[in-house]
Image (cartoon, rainbow, N blue to C red; front, side, top):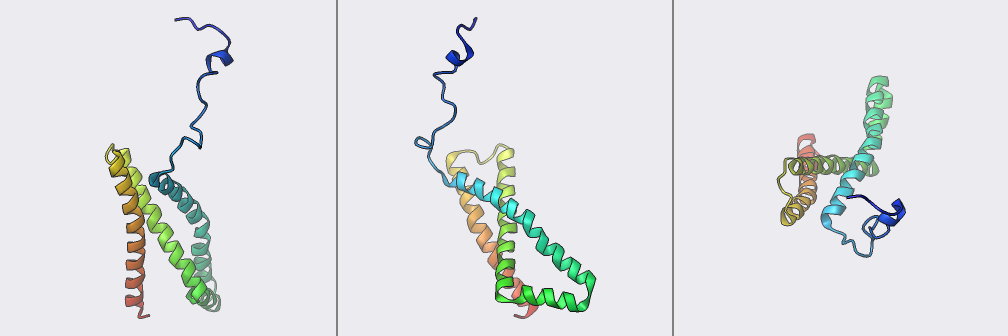
Length: 138
């Protein structure tokens, strides 16, 4: 069938994209955003790990200085955050992998996987830190 009219006439009735007034914000959408944010923060957070490695290779005094910073309340808070970011991003990647296989795409399953990612990342972070304190001795 031949098309008539100018290109702008043919596309005039078609919406360009879903508008925010008709789009429903879902938990799955938020979790997908979290996955992107955690990946970005981990990209920049690798600097912390590299700093620790450089300190370990530099001198015992500098290594002790960096370890003291990481051992402070603020340093531990940063490390706790990095632990959660890593676990949350990994579980989000597993969730996306499951979707790539064609599983878990029904609305209830998507919602369940998203919630399990959030609950699992919090629970596993807590477990890692408890185990670390038990092994380290406080």
